[in-house]
Length: 276
Ligand code: NCC
Image 1 (cartoon, protein in one colour):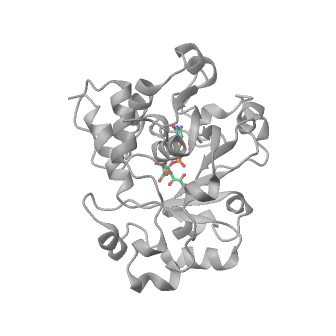
Image 2 (cartoon, helix red, strand yellow):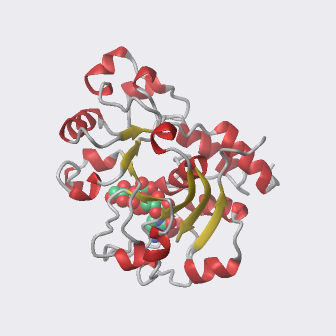
Image 3 (cartoon, protein in one colour):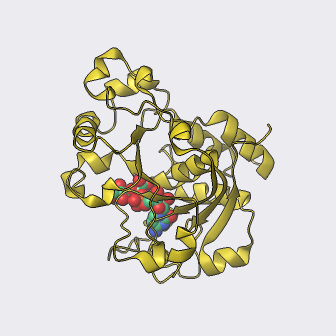
């Protein structure tokens, strides 16, 4: 059943994947020691109406792209994990409205989550891979990475920053749609932060430009624009079903192939006001 049209896929993404981050009331009362720090307003309320948004992947092919000014011209910019802007402004811009991180970032000391100023700009959103069928309470008992204490610590130290947690159901709901639109069985691992960030912005913005998710002519084995680490799996996937995520985004692209080729840029529609 992989002949879904782009319009059908957009409706599935809108109606089946809940991108609204958790609220404290979604968690069991035993979580109160840290859930009390969760934002009181929903992300949608907090961020308001957004027109044009940019999603900047961490791909090595962002290097030498000179897309910085174009990226910063958007109403909001989403970045991932430990991807920096300092020193890379010409290629990736400097605006950070949302930073989507995976749950390894606060739990693994090498990311210096508490101290690195990189994380202090914009709204933080974190996700953690849950077991396939787990609800919020089951996930809370058994997260992949125990980040709750780190979350509390971070929020206490940075009371003016807003820090959301994605619903643990979200990533598998998205995985279902990636699987339905793939020609074969895909790996039973959640989609990458890349896809989650793209869909998050599609829920908040009228239009989303995604940079170097579908790679340009600059594609190489260089994993990140900010690091000297070479691995093709960064671009095509290993753990994450990244190839299939990218094929899905390709089906939804409203721009043309030449723009992908030259700029690694894909244009996706917002889905907030979509009538399905
Ligand atoms: O690599 P990562 O993501 O931080 O990259 C963010 C998103 O950009 C897209 N990407 C990245 C590199 C590349 N060459 N092409 C790309 O398209 C992907 O969509 C990717 O999701 C993650 O998804 O959270 C991931 O996180 C890293 C790592 O945990 C963090 O960077 C923190 O160091 C994962 N790597 C490892 O665990 C070793 C990576 O698999 C996915």
